[in-house]
Image 1: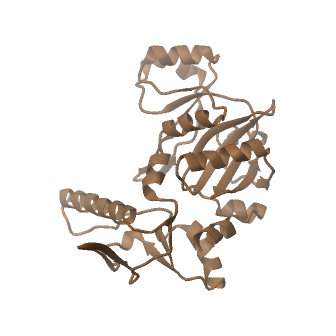
Image 2: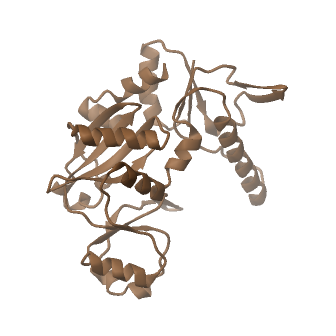
Image 3: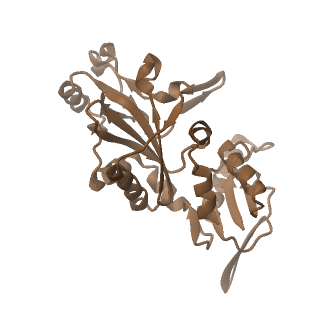
Length: 305
């Protein structure tokens, strides 16, 4: 039996579940926003045991996403307290499950989301990375800008969107414009990552499932709106083959981070170099499979069973 930990609007999970149903593979889907309604028990009585959705022994766990429930009829302070406790319960319950096979274990997923750690590990493996700076010093930033001839980009540490009352605003990777550079002392340096802006031939999304590598190219430089971030538009992905040395580095990075899955973003430069940008330990991929025919879902199912 496979346990899938997710939420109701995780369409990547829906994509795989359709295949699990067709193949009559047994699974249970745990939607985290229903944790206060679902059947969950953890017992410590000389030995540890659990029951989740009526099952007491899962063969494997696919850890995708979590989501907190909607809480009503409480004061704001009480609501915050209950949501914090619920979040703590979800994380602790999931990470303590005595299951041997994970895609991937939440402890390692949370650790691997650290973008600074990703860059450190990528360098150790032998990836080339953009020159990168994280600082709250205007003087250090000005030196960095000068070193790279005013050609730098800025991107968020973690959250790529702001939920306003009137709607959601997405935070993409952006080139820092000259009018801001020339007045940099006028700005507060809020948390973000500065990097050298590397000229791209095209970009690559590499999806790694255990020891399987699936690579797709995005020709982001053909559209002025996507030159700095291909996520601004729904671009077509195309299946490509990577050099074996780059495939090996991708697998090595996933293993180094103790993951079984990773969505890696690379740049291929006009000089033919491959540059590592970041890895998402739970990145989306279903639309890539639909566009390219890459059998990512089959690799996930094969691993879980």
